[in-house]
Length: 114
Length: 113
Image (cartoon, each protein chain N blue to C red):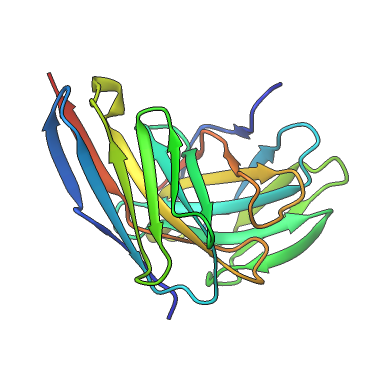
């Protein structure tokens, strides 16, 4: 069974640009969560999608948005990029999103904003 | 405020030695606590998950303990190997919150030969 895949793996953008990251969950998983990881802040929750609906949201500005498609694939968009958006963006999937389910993480997309 | 704090921030041990990582949390109401291992450049991998009623869980050489009264957890690594070098992240989930997890800053472990 294929794991969680994320594309692209690396990305370089400049301030003010916008970026879209993609995540394909494990087959059969309907819950996809997104996280930002930086050396200073550690892992921080961005949002979770389940069956194409945003179910939960972290404390990030509106420049961060996401969506989920009917095949459970998810995209995350960051508009008007800032230097501080440089980070590793991880997505994780689980079957239904119930509390005790294990989350499976993808390898991440490393974003560098210049 | 829901928080998860881990200690130490970093740790260096010799191969074959044991070590214990600590996690204190203030998340309430508590649902479950997970330990993840994250190798450099890769996504975290789940090691253990424990609910309120579980006070110990093992996964090979990794043993996690949970004291829900004092809101503390520990991850004990036995007979460390070079491949144990990684960041170990404690994650707590609040009851009633289906997707949002509160992450600790992690402990970076380096195992030297």
